[in-house]
Amino acid sequence: MTLSFTTPRLNIFEISSDIPKSEIQCLLTKIPTLLTPVVVKSLPPYFHNIKSKSDAHTWLEKMLAESRFFVVSQSDLESAIGFMFAFVENTDDVHIGYLLGEKYWGQGFASELLRGFITQTAKKENWVRLVAGVERANEASLKLLLKLGFVEDSIGKEEVVILNKNLSN
Image 1 (cartoon, rainbow, N blue to C red):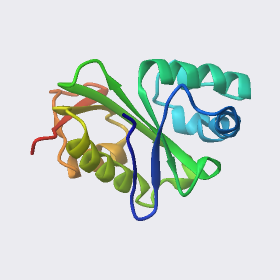
Image 2: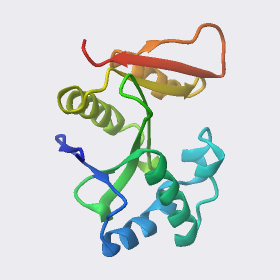
Image 3: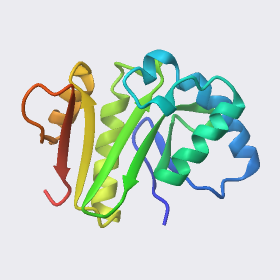
């Protein structure tokens, strides 16, 4: 079952490996424009240097193979502003990640996305807990996750803070 939902300003829809070729081409054009160096600075190496459709295709295949992949859009694929990922090894701890294109930062889109995602997954999935990792230096994401009820799981001054949110609360 795929998960798609809307918020007041966003459409979030799950992409699977059976996406039509025309939609893949649109997505492959959009991916390099969103995965800019400043956006992927603190993300794993495979998010970096996505500059061509070929790079985007390799990255997209990896994401589809390893996670549930969501496009965050203002209407359709052509107006994609970011992506969300859910790495589901088991339903107890589902690791999530998200990114928005730089020009969409500071406008409340991340908050709207995450609120909607939490609400929808609590209703439609059998997941127990969402887990997020964020660099301590990424104060905006750290504050947002705490504001949304995520609790810091790591102790001390680790560079990456691990937070979790129980979906039954």
